[in-house]
Amino acid sequence: MPKHTHIEGEAFRYLENARELLKAASIEDNLYIGKKPVREAFGTAYLAILEAINEALIKKGLTRKEIPKSVDGYMAAIKKHLSVNNGKLVREFDRLYETLHIAGYYRGLITRVTTVKDEIKGTEDFIKKLLP
Image 1 (tube, rainbow, N blue to C red):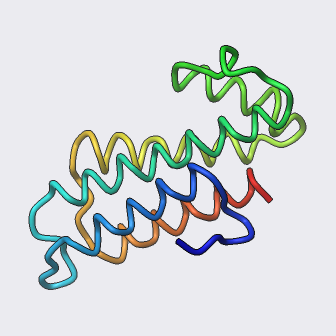
Image 2 (image 1 turned 120 degrees about the horizontal axis):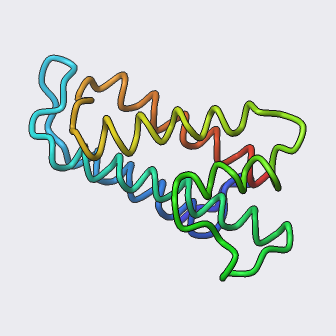
């Protein structure tokens, strides 16, 4: 598996897994047919984000036991350790949580191919910000 300079470790593997799940999904009229692979891809992309945050927090000196265990915990950790003077990262995480985890994975509401691809690209961009 090729290593990209901006994405490494588990986050990269999860993101690639999400892309692989989408490759196996059928497309018709710019819509994914069958929600299961798309929902799985969104769930896996969200896990990629959590892995990237975990890695970034560990690089900041947190221990595995200090890694957040909830969305609110992740928001607080991002605010405290990763974007001290800039709320953009917290807002971006919140948006990705709502899109990937809630709308995409949990509710299965996103099936338009271009929207799905944009969100996967947004996931990659977010990870690159955390793991430069």
